[in-house]
Length: 74
Image 1 (cartoon, rainbow, N blue to C red):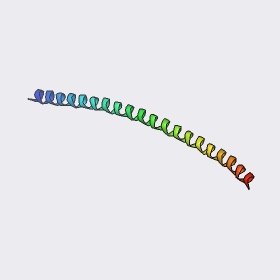
Image 2: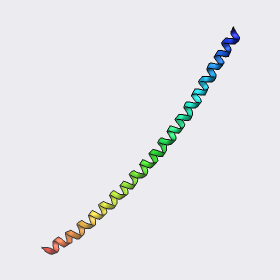
Image 3: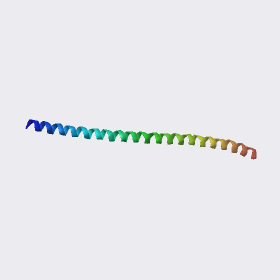
């Protein structure tokens, strides 16, 4: 009777450990996917910031050109 209870307990423990290991692998894969996604979003954001800065410089250049042109027209 005690042996059967011990065997059942050991079997339950083994199943719990197996389930925990499977969940751990799942979580590791999810973390890896989220890390890649985060990296991609960071790269895209930095690219947009760079493009924004470039466009602002271009606008400043146009303002300088057209301000000079407008002053000459007066």
